[in-house]
Image 1: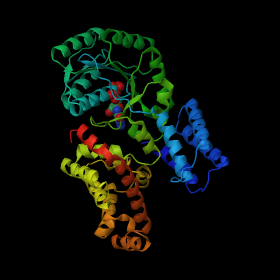
Image 2 (image 1 turned 180 degrees about the horizontal axis):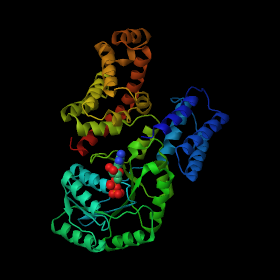
Image 3 (image 1 turned 135 degrees about the horizontal axis):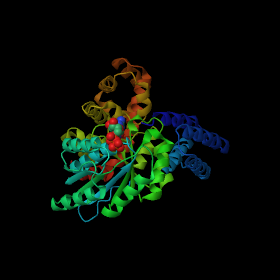
Image 4 (image 1 turned 135 degrees about the vertical axis):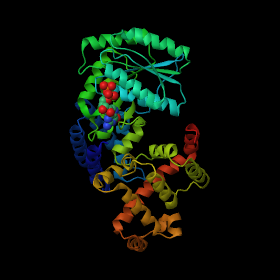
Length: 444
Ligand code: GDP
């Protein structure tokens, strides 16, 4: 996801990283390159302008603190501006409505509405322990109604029956009455989509909205359509109060333009990302984490959450306890994380979240990702126990020995150590309470 943008931005950041002092000229050059990178990523022009202006004024005004190099300062400025462009804080779903909380799904045909309805139902059922009912108001396409019925069956939620030719408002009202009767917590209403925004569609969804007053109206949009995604979302937002946007097919979106434009163009927060066709491929949108990922800094928080959810709960809990007690994360923990990840299946989606992972992934396009994990583990295995527990002792001669021992180049040892350090920094932050809270929240 967003590989092109990440590699362009990394080049800009790399060119500044080594500098001892940031001059105005360097900032201007970097700002120009940033602008090019964003335009190439198909970000809407007003968003690009605003973003670059912010970077310029903030980078010029920045006081270089003692602990950070100018390159790191610049990265921090870009990261902050990117987080803000993406919406600042994560905005969770609001389900505070007299049950059932109603979620209305809007969007063009093919955007991924029905798939997302199923994913959302699963997420609410599994993570929030909600009783969910879904209903299709697409009275034009029998296939759409059937598709939702199948998806609901797969994820194990109730599906209120509907049929072609019925009145959408009547279906939704009947579904609402049934959901109340069954004490459902959430009712998700899937609607008809057209290939373009048209008047009839807008009237129909506005009538549905007025009849059932949903607490959430989510606009589902295909991120691969780039700037058009933001434009379509805008057309909807002009007619209907959107409470959030779901960007789909992010797994195939190398550019990232829609993600960066949608918030500013529509004013509505992105709430979820669709990252694959399967029903578990829905991710809560955290602007700060996505900014990190786009900048090649990794997204260790999401990685941990995913790990906690999918892999050995006992081991994850042990790691959390250890971190809390010792406030230390060493190469043995890192190796443990790597091995657990290997058990999780999709390496690609995980690599995406590791610092430098997007580049690594690009380099590894044709390489077996599991092999890479085995190599990393082999490198760590070539270290002494002391080195694994106190990685700071690993200097040049030890690196040469470790490289020789595991049959790799010294650069690879260096890369591993860099990756480890970034992970350790993030883990330290997490360990000061955040992790424990996280584990509790997830019922881990
Ligand atoms: P709808 O017409 O808006 O209801 O769209 P569908 O839910 O039928 O989705 C259209 C196509 O997009 C289907 O083939 C889905 O499998 C696919 N799709 C939906 N979301 C995603 C996603 O996040 N990633 C990928 N790769 N495909 C998706």
